[in-house]
Image (cartoon, rainbow, N blue to C red; front, side):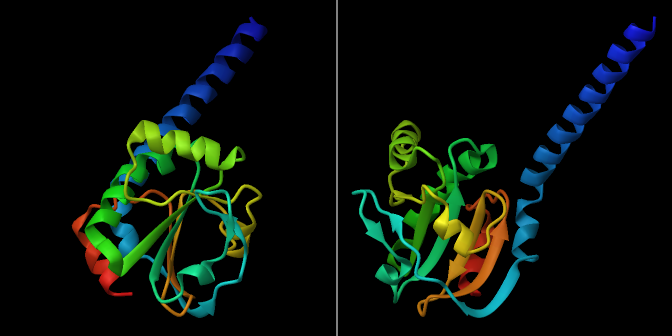
Length: 180
């Protein structure tokens, strides 16, 4: 009888934890609009010169993009929230045009190969392909969770960041970005 109670207790705990996890995950999607009023503001912290890879497997740095406002999204194919927001991020790049550049940096250990496969399968057409295999760029920004999006002005100074899932097609997004 004691063994049955032990398994029943563990089973109940597992169900409660799973239920809490599903609630928290779905709640995160519902709360994405609130992130725009809760953003963290950074007063002109200059970004470090850290190399990462472009689609041609060449090392580049963020200084390659000086003069553009950057939206740097750290993501991975194994991250459910990251995968969920990629389609809207892709559409946002098309909407923003040349005024802003979204740099979606894959943190997958298989690098460009895994990200390229994801782009093809999900029909991501407007985002450039970038990888940070050893997480050096991500670590330089002190990112501690995926997805995280960092906003960098034309002078390569970080001005804001948002952690977690965002539906990039929500009306507040344009207002948020224009306010940077």
